[in-house]
Image 1 (cartoon, rainbow, N blue to C red):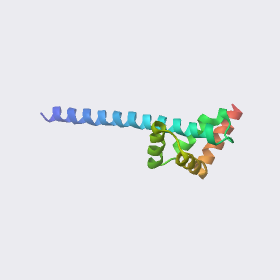
Image 2: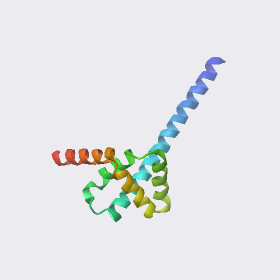
Image 3: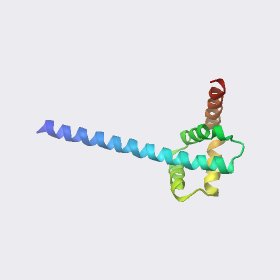
Image 4: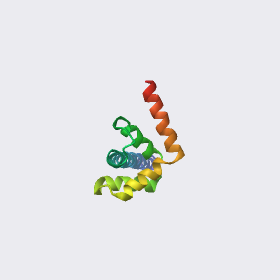
Length: 109
């Protein structure tokens, strides 16, 4: 009986972890789509070839609230608040380091 219960608990925990992983992946992809749209439409200093890597750096350096906001905006549409939030995260030192590192590796490759 205990072994059966342990199996059920283990299975349930694994299923929850998989669901969480899928949800996080979906949220990150949605957030990246919203940030990419902002970069293309409102941040002309980011070249088109650099949009994907820049968006990835912005999403990577966003906190949970910011990710939720970006993911929601991917569904409802971007607005000036999305542009402002993208700019705020983009200006962070960690984000700039990520962007510069990615740009250097692309130009070196």
